[in-house]
Amino acid sequence: MKNKNQMNISRRNFLRTAGAGTVVTAAMMTGCNQRNKVSASGGVIGEVPTDKMTYRTNPHSGDKVSLLGYGCMRWPMKERADGNGREIDQETVNELVDYAIAHGVNYFDTAPVYVQGMSETATGIALKRHPRDKFFIATKLSNHRAAPGPKSREEGIAMYRKSMRDLQVDYIDYYLIHAVGLGSGLETDMKRFINNGLLDFLLEEKKAGRIRNLGWSFHGDVKSFDYMLAMDIQWDFCQIQLNYQDWKYATGWNVNAEYLYGELEKHNVPAIVMEPLLGGRLARVPVQALTMMKESHPEDSAAKWAFRYAGTPENVLTVLSGMIYMEHLQENILTYSPLQELKENEYKTLERVTEILINSEFIQCTECQYCMPCPYGIDIPGVFAHYNRCVSAGKLLKSSNDENYRNARREFLVGYDRTVPKLRQADHCISCNECLPKCPQSIKIPQEMLRVDNYAELLKQNVEF
Image (cartoon, rainbow, N blue to C red; front, side, top):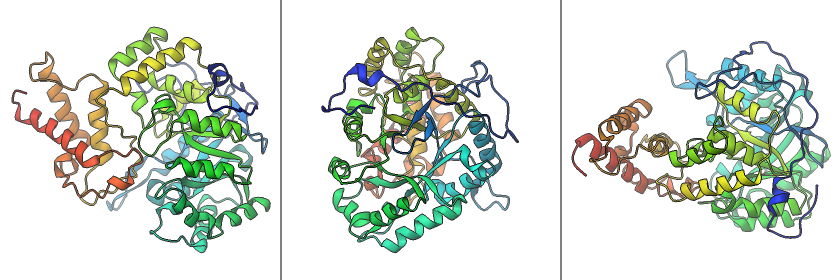
């Protein structure tokens, strides 16, 4: 791995990859579903290999990590047997984890705050059924969700130890300080884990071997990012948001990945990639953008383009994907078994696609759920997801005179009622603004809710516009 002395990275260096490394022997297959030929869109993708996963080596620990990492921020849910709310579908989680490990995936990323606090326990149950040397577990110090004001060292230590218990492990492979740069940026970070001695505690835990790799995830103030890299600490890894739109056109709390990746490479810090699909938006690009992609690779999905982009840089250790459906897991495994790095002409295609995306009608929501729960019950991510699906399909009506008005009107309204319960739709937003400081994309949520509601109301009234 080479250090760079300039912030700008040449395309040749960006496109080099470390290549496929060692392959992992197929793990236990108990409970695995062998549906190896159907894609998420219903097409045929072929057999999913068990021995061709691309691996990257962490230069600090020597870990050979699968380029596809399993993000456990969203697990499949089901209704509780007593009818009192929802719970994680553990049987399905076990099946997904078994399949992932059997096909070479060995990195699993969770946090105390994921899935309403249930992710670590569910992830630990699924992984406990496999030999400990078959997987790397990553979790986080998520004390950014604590009450405002100075953060307690004791509370942070308690959170760390609870993660150990919930995951059923006696060491953590990759431990992250979660969401560096949020809140008031560096001022908040100093209170969260520096002034109170939490970082010193974590460094001692690393010396003791209970943390094998120590790093942090970044959202927010770039001053915090620069401060962390300037510390007299050799970080083992850093998690950043990287995708082809955010490379130069990051929005909200995020910073252009071109800068973040370049700085990490200079400091010999491997990158863990989050949001390779921008919350799914890059998997459902507008029709004109998808047409450009199909001209180069008729059989490839928009998601595959995005995953190849995120996995191509040589300093990327793993690319996280929150896969709650078997079909998505299979397609992503296939994309990285092995990785086909991007070529120059494909880079130019994605530059043209990006131009379409940043000038489209998309609401820049990644469905991260940070805005939830809404105090008035609005399904904010669900509302935006339905609207964005219509945008990407080219079915957002400009006028009641549009040729496909009748069908598009019906699809929007029927789909809206099917995916978002009526009492949780945009028309129930009262603009309380409680969601605004929680959104990493800095979306003006009440304003966008009004836009969706106005559009839906026009269609419901079936009037000319």
